[in-house]
Structure formats: structure tokens, C-alpha cells
Image 1: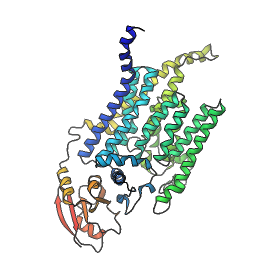
Image 2: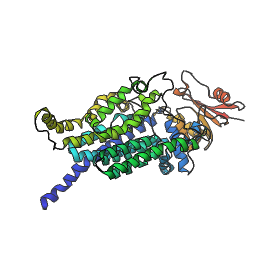
Image 3: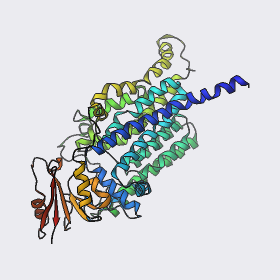
Image 4: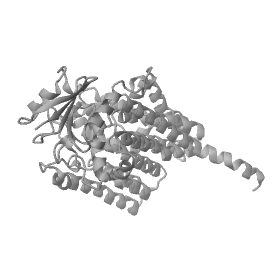
Amino acid sequence: MSEKGTRWRPLELLSAYLPAALSVLLGACLYITFSVGQWRSLDVPSWDLAIFTEAAKSYSHFQAPIVPVKGPGYNLLGDHFHPILVLLGPIYRFFPSGLTLLVVQDLLIAVSAWPLVRLATKQAGWLLASIIGIGYVTAWGFQGAVSSQFHEIAFALPMLAWASAAFVEGRWVATMAWSAPLVLVKEDLGLTIMMIGLILSWRGRDSIKSFAYPLFFAAFGVIAFVVTIKLLLPAFNASGTWAYSLDGSQGRGNVTLIERALWPSQKFGVIAMAVLGAGIIGLASPWFWVILPTIAWRFLGSVDYYWDWKHWHYNAILVPILLGALLDAHRRWSEREQSDISRGLGWVISRQRPFVATVALAIPCAAALITAPQLPMWKMTNPGFGAVSSRMAQVQEINSLIPENANVETDLTLLAYLIPDHEVYWVGSAKGVAVDYVVVDQHGAAWGDQKNVEAVSYAQGAHPGSTYKLIYNSGGFQVAQRVN
């Protein structure tokens, strides 16, 4: 073909790959910037980062994930089943910091954009794909996950993104291959695998092989779920049970299943954002219903964090599924209708479907734009966001004051910051342990309405028989050292 074809090929390659590459870059830069700013400003929303940092520290030394933050000798594999976190060990070995886990999560989110935006480029061209990529990497579920800091669910996002793209392209084996490792991420994802298997079986119902094999895959998901919650988790848990439950009756009174699922109205925010995330037309794709197990255990549960659409990590897993459903519906609606409809209103509607499908692709991005002021990344517009906290000097002094490998009990603020060099307990979790040091943040949120908690009085009250003395008092931080 001649020179013309050769001349234009680089531009074709650029337009084919540039939207996906820019989406990944945008997601990585946005979220890493936020995470670094959060870390520098001592913004600590929960103890999750500390828990996973201790697990990564243990894995980096080829040890079981013992997490003193949750109690002496607590094996984290008895909390949730996430053996995939062993992959954090080598990374943490080279970069021993809680910030390392935040960056890993940011990169996992960003990379998950690649297969879906590449697919969007094939289906809709580079311009629409670029819009889709922006909407995807700034999605509500991802922002909440990054803001609430590291969680194991981050490892599921690339898997689900590649599985979603494979489903849209009709590659059933690839869909199952990308989905199967979800059982190593979190125990409830076995139910997600079950749903994927059932959907693949439905799509392949015209062929015995395409119908049967996905049913075996669905059975694999159910078996993995049951084995995990009945055998594996109890085996690692000190109490010999699964620490969590799908029973949502606690604190809900005598209500029906439907009432539990739909009340309170806070849950409608999640439903609305899921519908918009699928571009509305995504509801016509069976892939949309892959979100059902996740939505079910959350809505039937009794923890109000599960129902929130703005914060926490619970919505992150929905985002790649929803975009996959949108792209699946777009592909089908964009194909020319080869049906018997040839007249009347049915023909008119059929003719409008490609246009509607194209418009629908922009809906997730529009939703991201409209809701942006309500979501965590909006903090980055505040003057001084990401500036180093004036208290960071005290954090460094405390870290150097406490000897390496000493055991420390502390509240929320410094949990993750002290873990790399010390064995760290959450206040109240060090029962039966005569901790060497107690660190109190008198300005911290962990103490609720209590004001100016004294490190020495807390330490001696929490550890009868031990005597402590105050060795540091600056910037609202106090350090008490055990002297007997």
C-alpha cells in the first residue's frame, strides 16, 4: 500500500491508543497528588491504612500478616480473605511507608482505565473515548476509595476492567480468566464470579458449550465463597468464626427483606449514581447485574457506611462493571437493526437507537462533572491543599525518639506513620501487652468528646501494674514511656 498508508499509520496508532494512555496518566496524576497531599497534611480518615501497612510489612519479611493494630497476634487473613495482598510485600520492602500503599492503589485505579477506554476508542472514536476516560478515572466510586485510603478492593479493579472489556467483545474464556482471581481479593467476590458465570451462560444459551461452561464457572464462585467463609476465614480467625455476616437484621427492627434493601433513602444515591455510571442504557446489558451481589450485601447490611455514595471504598468495584455495561449496550444499539421491524413507531425507535447510544456515552462524564463539588477530590481546589502539616515536625521527632522495633500504642493520627519502624497497637487493642510507649494526639478524632487526654493517665489506666512517665509533649502530641 503505498506511501500514503505508511505516512498516516502513526496518526492512526496515536488516535487508537492516546485516549487510553491519557486516561491512565490523568488518573495516576490526580490520585497520587491527592494521596501525597493527604499524607503530608496528616489527614487520616480511618485505621484501614495502618492495618494494611502492617500486613504489607509482615509480607515483606515473608511472615504471616499479623496486625497488632487489631489486637495481639491478630492474623488479618481471619478478618477478610485477601491473600493477593502478598504482592505488596516486595514493593513495601523497597519503599517501607504507608504512602507506598496509597500510590499502589492509585496506580491500580488508573491502569484499570486502559482496557475500557481502548474498547471505547474502537467503538466510538478517539474524541468520545477521551470523554469516557475522563468520566471513568474521576468516577464517584474511585474518589471515595482514594479518599478513604488503601483497601484490598483496589486489586479487583483491573481484573474487572479487563473482564468487562472481554465480555463486550464476546471473549468468554478471557472474561472468566480475568474474573477468577477475584476470589483472592475478598471473600464476597465469589458471589460476583457466580453472577458473571450466570450472565455468560445466558448470553451463550444458544450453544451447549457456551451455556454449560459458564455454569461451572458460576459454581466455582459459589464454592469459593462457601469454602472461604466456612473454612478458611474461621481457620485464621482467633474466635474460629467469620468476623462478618450478610445478615443485616442487627439494629433494623422487624422489617421485611424489601424494606431492608431500600430503607433508608440514603441508598437511592448509590442506585442513582450506578444508573448514571452505566449511561442509563447500560441497564439493558446483562453485565449491569454483575453489581448485584455487592449491592445486595451492602443494602441488606446494618452498617450505614455501606450505603454512602460519596465516601469510602465500597463503590469502587462498581465503576468498571458499569462502564462495561454501557459499552456493551452501546455496541448492540449501534449495530444496524436487522429485524422485521420496518414500519411505524417501532421502526422510528429502532432508527434512533444508535444516536441514543452515542449520547449515553457522555452521561458518566456529565455525572462526574455535576457531582464534582460534592466529592473528595474537590478538596484539591482549596488553598494550601497538600501543604505539609505544621505538626509533621513533631511526627518525625516522635518517630526518632522511640527506639526501633519498640511496641507502641497510639490513636488514629500516627498509626500508619509509626508502623515502618515499630510494632504498633491501636488504643485499646493492646490488652495483656505491657507496651513500651503510648503516643496520644490530644487533637485527634479518636478520643471523641474527650479533651486533652493525658498520655500517662491513659497508659496507666489501660495497663494496670505498669508505670509510665511523660517524655515528650509538643504540638498536641504526648509520649509516655513505660519505666517498669
